[in-house]
Amino acid sequence: MARTVKCGLIQATNAAPTDAPIEEIKRANIEKHLSMIEEAARQGVKILCMQEVFTTPYFCAEQKPRWYEAVEKIPDGPTVRLMQDVAKEHSMVIIVPIYEEEITGLYYNTAAVIDADGRYLGKYRKNHIPQVNPGFWEKFYFTPGNLGYPTFKTAYAQIGVYICYDRHFPEGARILGLNGAEIVFNPSATVAGLSEYLWKLEQPAHAVANGYFIGAINRVGHEQPWDIGEFYGQSYFCDPRGQIVAEAPRDKDHLVVADLDLDMIRQVRDTWQFYRDRRPNTYGPICAD
Image 1 (cartoon, rainbow, N blue to C red):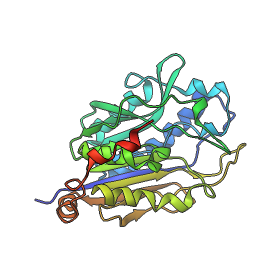
Image 2 (image 1 turned 60 degrees about the horizontal axis):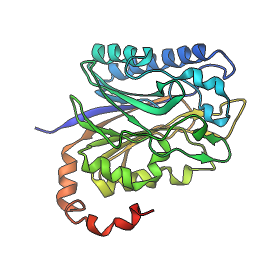
Image 3 (image 1 turned 30 degrees about the horizontal axis):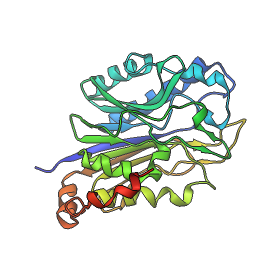
Image 4 (image 1 turned 135 degrees about the vertical axis):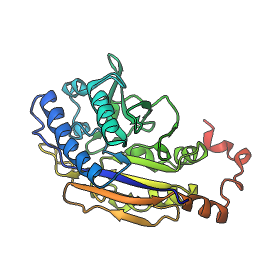
């Protein structure tokens, strides 16, 4: 019997003025995404991922401590608890990327993974933290992840998460495959002029090199007052052959939906034996100081 899973990605503009109170910004973005989750449920989506730090604008465009107020505990914070109820209601796996507080002053860029019965399965913390001019001042806000590259056995597929800047590093993408990922989701926030020429190169290449599906998500629009560039959307799914099978436009809120045939993974890996032919004993130099 074919293993086909209907999956979804949400790309969206920020829903509130960036100078509004933090809780108001979070509430507006959550309400906006809840309506898009409802649409995903109507379309039969079984695994859904939202964009990087989906409850806020991409605040790393500036370095101000006020954004520390956006942090939440995982899994005990209000957003993850809410999404657990939503996931259970719709029998939907939901990946929830938010700004995480471990303890006061120790914060991560994190995605929680919730199973279709509402159970919290675990989290991925972004490992590679950029400090890129202009406007990607992430080291001011995020500690590098310390949980490795976990995968999560959900009701529908075994999935992994990579977050935004992580996608430039093939090493973690390979580890996710070795850890059993069938689909890797990459919630992102990236702008034209900086990364657009890489957007449809790197992640299809990871999909080919590792024989899995990728769901790549990017937010949309210009976020004032910073306007570090256009968040160009174009969220997409690609298959283990590197072919884009569904794609969003660049300039508007959109729910991307695709039926992913997980049997393709075996077909591709039986042809291209990249895992069999690895030579890890020769790769020491890439881990040397």
